Length: 130
Image 1 (tube, helix red, strand yellow):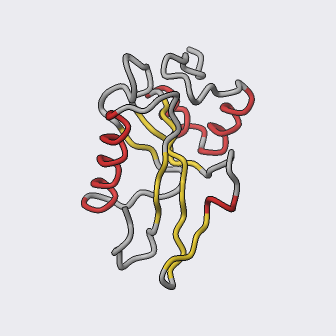
Image 2 (cartoon, rainbow, N blue to C red):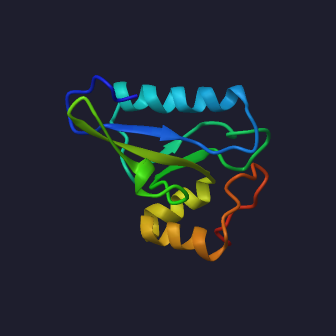
């Protein structure tokens, strides 16, 4: 995704899923294309996927987050004299994206923690009430 970039926006993304699906390859490809050709992605950015990430999921956006489940060992890696960041692409709903815009990325991450985000469930409900 960032191998030959000449700026400091050196990131790679991964998404966790309950199963293998070609839609996930497309999701990462679209994010890579956006990152390389439109605007560089970075930590705490959101992406409008434009359709459900899997099946008929309510999650049609994604949030670029630290890899909390794997820690710093996965987040940072050196390669050919550069340091790359590996971030977790978390599928979210449009309301959750709006919440992040209004309340901030830390508030969204606290919401995920407080409500125990079921990140592997494409059929999960939106965590933002109202």
